[in-house]
Length: 64
Image (cartoon, rainbow, N blue to C red):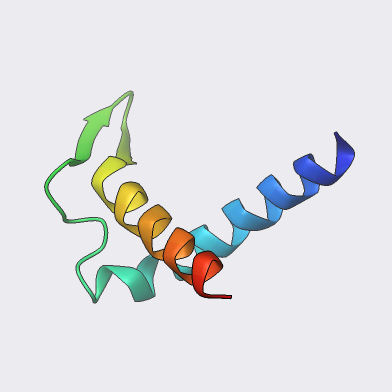
């Protein structure tokens, strides 16, 4: 259980660090990615980008 928690935290840190770089390639602006303002903050729900990145990760895992 502790290993999964570490993996999830590292994945979240990696994705937050790569967000600006991935936005240059269109991730975060795909159909299905939502941005809205609530409670004085900008919120992002990158559902479409998550699906695309998951498919890429599955393809890489299958090839390895």
